[in-house]
Length: 514
Image (cartoon, rainbow, N blue to C red; front, top):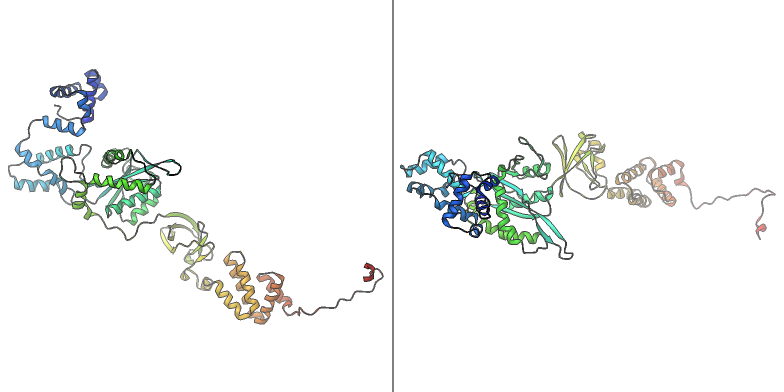
């Protein structure tokens, strides 16, 4: 056989093309292999007298075992060493464990065994057999590799029959290869972050780093050395106290572990679901989790343990604890601190206070469903529970200048109680002003101006002025001030002045109209 065994897929292609009458030279050109290699593999199949149908029906694993069994028998020394390989594979995932340390343990038990260089060589050969894509021993709890499958699943609307394609999110823990899969409506930022978060809660812990592909929801700008991570995803990682390490662009081997997982999931999840119809995302995800459980509990090829057992025994305890509650996705806005020490949050049309020292500054607003935070140059100035009452104020007294704190205590109840001490007409007048459809602060200022007039003219005159203004149907500070200045509040409205018409020959009397 060839010194270096080629991919079993190409082995199948060699025999398929040869059985179709393609020459060895043409097969060599098509597959990029030497003619000697083509000849050796064809001779192997001819020795066993396999038909084209028998070869095409073989799985890649069956072919691999067949070629492996055709090789010369292994020595007793090598067979003894290979018994340790599954144990070494587990131990290397633990922090601080190296191949040299494991060799020392092995050599202490078997002084006639292999030296370090041969030990490393045979272990490397074994890892290539059990993991033919790329074998990297990741430390437990270190990295979570994240990607989406190229193919999609779908759901069907129960009423209209409309088919909706779904993205399929997939992630793999580097050490145990414990896998999580879920379907989601899109790869948009919100759906992506929710999928990553669902995975962390599925695992019951947080790895040291998240390793996403360079999709837009995770990476704003790709770079070989310093990619720019999406602001929201970066905040999500900070909340879970983990790092984001995007894979390098055009470097598929950086994410070989998750690429291999995608191929396996196509067989173990996509294929079993192909004849089933689902009508909602939760329904299809429930079916995915059942198949995923089987996948994770299936033993690795050439090993006596599964992804689930490796996760439970080695990796689970290395994950960091989850926070008490889930992350709330945040959004961003800009604003200016107004002269009244408040910022205007346009999304809810609500006002929030900020320390008065920052009046006039341009600030950044970071908000979630429950919280509004105000920042100036990375310094958090204020944090308020989110309120969605339009044109209302959320104020912290300490944010206001000392001479303005009185204003922060304004309320309709306060003004009505104040007016009631002046008189019933004044109270009714103030209520009318507060009921007017205008900005609350404008109403408060009008009420404050009117009530302060009592200090100049007394309660009685102000109450009378409010009565007369009500008769006019005018509700503002200016009309009250004018009535008081003109003295109209003292007029006797029951007194009617007698009007005497002048005697003139051009004036017709009442008899003219009879």
